[in-house]
Image (cartoon, rainbow, N blue to C red; front, side):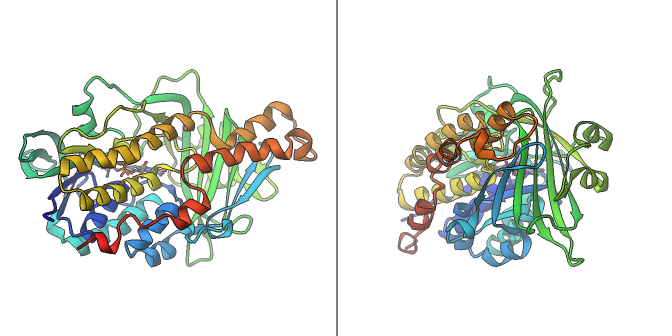
Length: 422
Ligand SMILES: Cc1cc2nc3c(=O)[nH]c(=O)nc-3n(C[C@H](O)[C@H](O)[C@H](O)COP(=O)(O)OP(=O)(O)OC[C@H]3O[C@@H](n4cnc5c(N)ncnc54)[C@H](O)[C@@H]3O)c2cc1C
C-alpha cells in the first residue's frame, strides 16, 4: 500500500507523539512548530497508563521512567487535609503500565529528541506558524509564517493534521465563528518547586471543594534527594472577565497566599511551597464546546485542537497521545486517506466529546464537594458523612466511561500492530 505523506502543525505532546507513531508505521511526516526553540515550558502533567502503554510501544519506556514519577496513590481530602477517599493508581491499581506524573516541558523535550533522532532534523521545522491551508482532490497546501524573517512558506502533502493546541489556527479556519474558549469562572495558579517529598513521595492529592481546592503531586526526582513538586491552587472567581489563556502568564505570590495561606496540613505545608516557588503562573479554567466534525477532506484535528477539555482527571495529554495512535492505525489500514481521517474521527470524537462535557461536572472530585456541603467544619469518620456505596458510585463512574478501566487498558490490542506495518 502507498502510504500518504503527512504534515503535522504543532509540536506539542500530541503532534510529537503523532510524528513518532507515523514514523513507526512507515508513514512520511514533517512537523511544523510555531516556537523556534522549544524551552521546557509548563508545570505538571499526568500520563495515564493507557498513554504510557503507547509511549512504551514507541520505545520511550526508559526515558519516561527516568524523568517522571510513577504515581501510586490518589488521595481526595477536604480543605483540612482529612482523607475522603484514596485509591491506587498505575501499577498499584493493577495496570500493566504505570501512571506517570511528569514535568510537561521535560516530556515535550523528551519526545522532541526522539522525533529528531528518528525522522531527522530537517523534518522538524521550528519557528514556522501555520496561518492557513487550502486543498483539492490531489493534495493539501499548508501556509506558514516564518517568525524570524516574516516570510511565508508553503508545503504540500496528502494529509494535514492540526495538532496546534487550544488556539488552533486550523480549527479556526474550519470553525471561523467559534470565538474564544469557554471560561468556567475559575482560575488556576500553578508552579513546580523543589522540596522534601510528602507522604510516600508517589502520592497525588486533591483537597478542598468545588470553589477552592488544591492539586499537589511530585513530578520528578532531584539528585539532592528533593522532589520536584507540582502544585495547583484553583479558585472560583465570579468577578473576573475571561483572561486570554497563556500558559506563561506570571501571578504574584501574595495573591495566591491571600487565598491559600491557611492551607497547612500535618503532612503538607502548602504556604511554604508557595513561598519557595520562584515562578507562579495563572491560567483560566477553559475548554471549548464539542464540535460535530474534525475531519474535512484531507485535513483533521488532534489533541487540544480537536477536544480542548478542562483538566479534570488529568486526561488532556493522554488523550492527545491516543488520538495519535488511532490516527496512525487508520492511515496505515485504510487505502483512501480521506476515508482514513473519517475512520479516525469516528473512533475518537464521540468519546472525547463525552469527556469534555463530563469534565464540566467534576468527575470523582464530586465526593469532595459532597463532603464540604455535608461537613463544612470537617468530620470524625468520612462514612458518617458519605456512605461507602455513595463514594464508590461517584469514583467508579468516570474510569469505565472513558475506557480507562484496568481490564480494557491491559487487554486491548495494540493500536499499531506489527502485521499492519507490511
Ligand atoms: C507552553 C505550554 C505549557 C503547557 N503547560 C501545561 C501544564 O503545565 N499542565 C498541563 O496539564 N497542560 C499543559 N499544557 C497543555 C497540554 O500540553 C495539552 O493540554 C495536552 O498535552 C494536549 O497536547 P496538544 O499537543 O494537543 O497541545 P499543546 O501541548 O498545547 O501543543 C500545541 C503545540 O502547537 C504549537 N502551535 C500553536 N499554534 C500553532 C500554529 N499556528 N502553527 C504551528 N504550531 C502551533 C504550540 O506552540 C504547541 O507547541 C501546556 C501547553 C503549552 C503549549
